[in-house]
Length: 134
Image (tube, rainbow, N blue to C red; front, side):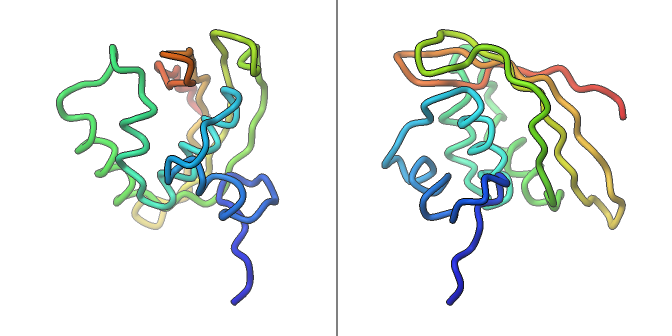
């Protein structure tokens, strides 16, 4: 069976890129790595990972259901990282701007977001994002 590239567009096999993060065998070293792994989690339906990597202070009671609904109704088809601010291995906060292409009801659309991340107990977490109109 051929090796499957990671959905996050890293050009690495999924088994060596985002899957170890999804399985809890590794932690994202940077905000960008977390953002890429969260994108892959949407593609792969790893809803528990999406919730676990959301900053606890911003989690809502229906967060799992919201993430699951998004994962089931959208077919993510491509990721482009546009800009990264801070978010390195020694930073406490970071921002990642990206575009994610997707299909919903057979219509191709672009999700353009500037996401904010911060460390919580040493691990990177998603805080929130500002979505831009394309």
